[in-house]
Image 1 (cartoon, rainbow, N blue to C red):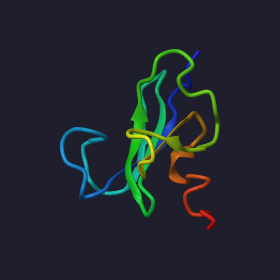
Image 2: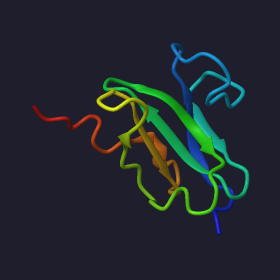
Image 3: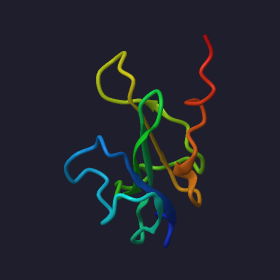
Image 4: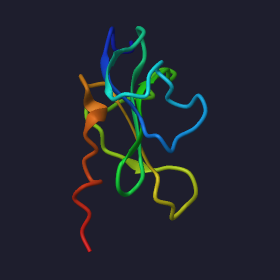
Amino acid sequence: PGPHNLTCVSNKHPSVRGELGDAGGAAAGAVRCPPGQCCIGIWNRSHALVQGCWGGEGDACPSATCSPSPAGTPGGSVLLCLCHGHLCNGNATGTATATG
C-alpha cells in the first residue's frame, strides 16, 4: 500500500511553465499529498525544478530517500527522484556532491 497522508516539499522554479508540479502556488513550502501518493523531485545540475506529490501506481516509489536518476534525454542534465519519506524530496543526494 502507498504512503498515507505523506507530506512533501512543494516547489516550482520560475522557469517551469504549465501545470507540471503545480500545487496551487509557486512559493516553496510543504504540501500534504492525497493517500497513496508519494514525493517527486526534479532537478537540473544547479537547482530544483519541480518538487511535490506524485500519484504513481503501485510501488512506483520504493525508496524512503531521494536518490535521483537521470530522466529525459540520455546524457541530459535532468535528474528525477520518487520517494516515500517525510519531506524526502527536499534533498537530492548526489546533486550537490558532484565530483570532477
